[in-house]
Length: 204
Image 1 (cartoon, one colour):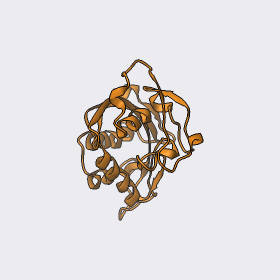
Image 2 (cartoon, one colour; image 1 turned 30 degrees about the horizontal axis):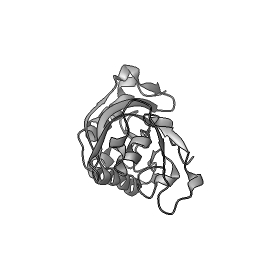
Image 3 (cartoon, helix red, strand yellow; image 1 turned 180 degrees about the vertical axis):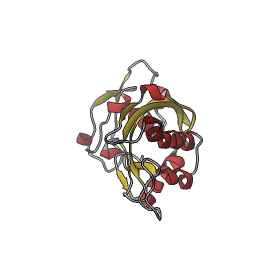
Image 4 (cartoon, one colour; image 1 turned 90 degrees about the vertical axis):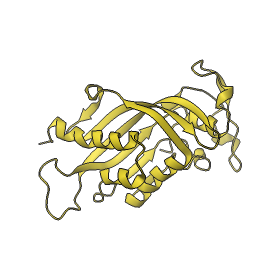
């Protein structure tokens, strides 16, 4: 029998509180399982890895999960983060998986360019089996798998200092120039700012 809904959602609220407050990776890691091995993946095209190394990669194990959140803190800052009401979350109690959306203003630190973004989390929970004794049902629930879909078009442009040249919210088309060492064929020809969760896809 799956845990009651309040028990299932409690670890999500804890993760939200830590992340929205800008907690260090050492604090965020306390919300992840050590066993089973945790996984983090923020979806984005493989060709972004050079300039945006937190995108399009699997971060597996606690140390790598910590690396992901350290990379986020190195490249980005954010403010005014809010999440939709839990009544709007999609909850699969059998698989202990929750999907939810949030909003925040993000800034790419090197260029100082900012944008408002809606992102989605898909979080799968598991009992953390590293304790000395078996916890009661739902009492040891932590995050085992954390996936993110966000506005890769905006962060890509901001990383190049080009976001200010694109009119926000108008669907202005942009041509994407390959980074050094990338092939022209690796890049979609055109996308629209605000395509967000689907603009550049993932590495699979």
